[in-house]
Image 1 (tube, rainbow, N blue to C red):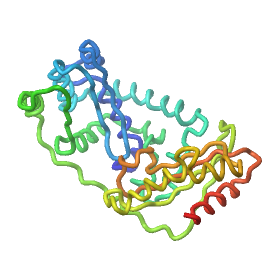
Image 2: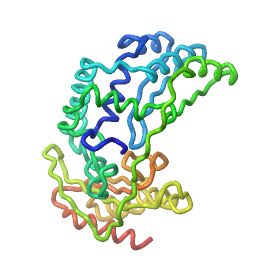
Image 3: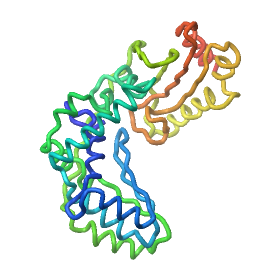
Image 4: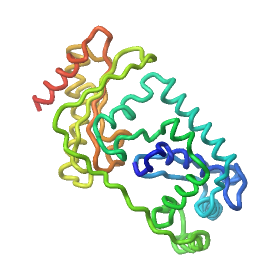
Length: 302
C-alpha cells in the first residue's frame, strides 16, 4: 500500500529483484547454497510488507544469515536484472489475473470500489504502464527508502543457542549502514455515505459471481474487530453456516460461497482500513439481486 503513485506493483517487482544476486553472490548462488544445505527459501509480497524466508537445518544458519545480509546490504540492481524480472512479473500477471477465470475477483476489483485513496485503492500487482516505465534509478531509490534496517524485522527460530545466534546476526548484519525508516502514508479513508456497485465483465468466467464488502473496525482494536472474524465463520464456514444453509442448501441459488476478513484472506494479517468480504458464485439464470437480497435478509436476522 505504500508504493509511490505511478509505480504500482513496485513492491512485488522488487521482491523478484532480490533474488537476482547481490554484492558477493552471483545470480542463483543463494539458491544453490540453500538447496545444497537441505533447505528451501522464497518470498512473498503482502499489502504492508514483503517477507523473505528460509527453512534449513540449524547447522546451516550462518550460511543463511550471510546470504540474507548480503542481499539486504546490496542487491544487484542492473538493467539486465530489471528487464528480466519485469518480463517475469508481467507473465505472472497474465497467467494469474488476465488469462485466469476470476483472476482479479475480488481482491483486485473491490479495493477501488471500497476505498478512495491511492494507497488503499490501487492495484498492488501492478499496472503494465507503471511497470514498463520503471528504471534502475527507481529500483535503487525504492531499495534505499524501504529496505532500511530500521524498516526490517529479522526473525530466527529453531534448535539454536540464543547467544551464538545473536553473535552471528551481529557479525553479518552489524555493518549494514543505518538508514531511517520511511514515513508511512496516511491510510485514513473518508466515510462511505452510500452503497457502491460496480459490474465487471470476465469473458473467461463460466458462471457469474458477486462479492460484497463492508468496512470493519481497526484490527488493532481487538474487542471491536474480533466479532467480525467470528461473524465470517458463522455466515460461511461449513455446511451448518447461516448463508450456506440459506443460499446453497435451501434456496439453491448459489453454487459456492466464502467469507473472510481482509483482501488476502487472513484476518490477522491486516491493518486498518480493511473489510469483511462475502463472495458467491451463482447460476447464469439467477439474478444477482436475488443473491444479494438473500444475504441481506440473513444479516438482518442476526
